[in-house]
Structure formats: C-alpha cells, structure tokens
Image 1 (cartoon, rainbow, N blue to C red):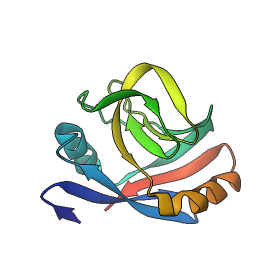
Image 2: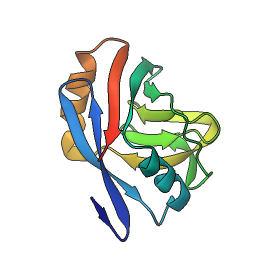
Image 3: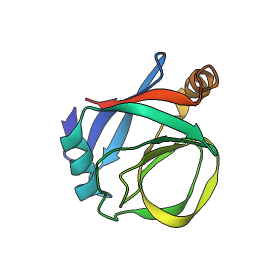
Image 4: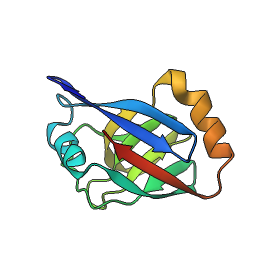
Length: 127
C-alpha cells in the first residue's frame, strides 16, 4: 500500500509475528525506493548482541543517519546491506540509515515471538 509520503510494508518475524511498518519517503527517499524495489526480502536473520540482523544485497544511500538506536528501531547498513532490528538500546561505532520502527502496539508480541525462537529466525519484508 502506498500514499504520497510513505510506503507501508509488512514485516514478519518467525512464524507467529507480523506487523506493518512505514518507510517515510521524505526521510529516506532513495533507500526506501531501493527496499521497495527489492521486495519481497526473505532470509534467515541472526540474533546477536541485542540485534536481529538480516543480510541483503540492498545498498543504502546514507540518508537519515544515526549511530544510536532504541529497541524496535530498524536500520540498514549503507555498505553491507544488513537490515537490523534492534532489540535493546544500542550505540554503534558507525552510522546507519534509520529506516523505521515496529509500532509500539506490537512490541510485546514481537518480544514473545523472538523469545520462543532460536538464534536464527525467519524474517520477511513484503507488501
């Protein structure tokens, strides 16, 4: 689903969790387009160091850069293409493009899903 200011895409983690996340085109016009053009994005995300990381071939544009992320924030590393879902407050030694965050109403369900999964979890981004 699309409107003039954002793309709404579905994030699925494991077999029991999905939610809609917003890619704000005004903040990340090039990166959001690259993500949307690559949909669906499917893979096995690795849970490590308070993060859930999914390797992709998407190269970000260096927009909306941050090095501090809150739990449930989502970023993309601009040179490796790794999409990260932060599970705890994190300060990085480098900057990444802030992409979106999981809606607050879905936090408890996501935590429950991740706690019941192993170190490798299916992750999907799609329409």
